[in-house]
Length: 226
Image (cartoon, rainbow, N blue to C red; front, top):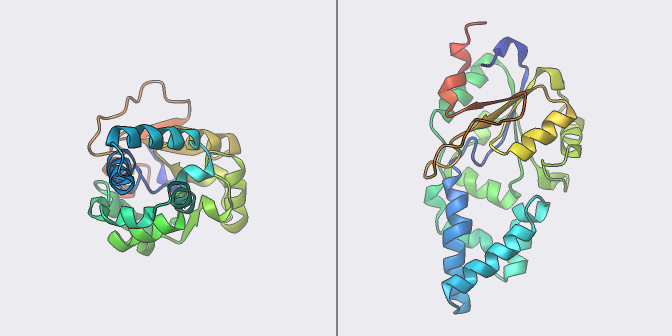
């Protein structure tokens, strides 16, 4: 599926790609509404409705990922509430094997995430991602979400890469589409980003976007073209 001889730079998403998306989905859809209701002494159903309206209004914008924004908007310490369920932060299957192999093969490995730096710090406390990365880039550094093709131009300014020899792995199709518009040639998505949800349908994926369930399917050591 991946000819590793053609790849020099690997750009990796974090949530739903390297880490189980269950933590984020559980926090935003279950834990936050419950705690918001408790703190404000309102019915949980009302809290759920109010929060979902606010969250959906910011989808696709940088605020959607910004802990500072949500802490101010909700008058809550969102980072502290995330710490209450931090035990759910985990690597997806075979991720560490994959990252170790990339280190041994000499590929340039860069984390590119929409996650806020506060969220990055919290997750780094639970799983040591930094040890496998040559650089970590948050879209908040540029104030542009990955869904905007301009993001990849900004990445290229600080982390020069050739789009023809670059692989991006991300669970978000809008992000992959923006990368494709920018010109990144090798694109791969994840069909099982959340361990507690059903596998996503691979049918109907955009041309040029491949899909895997887990990283053991694309280990460089399994590349027969090598």
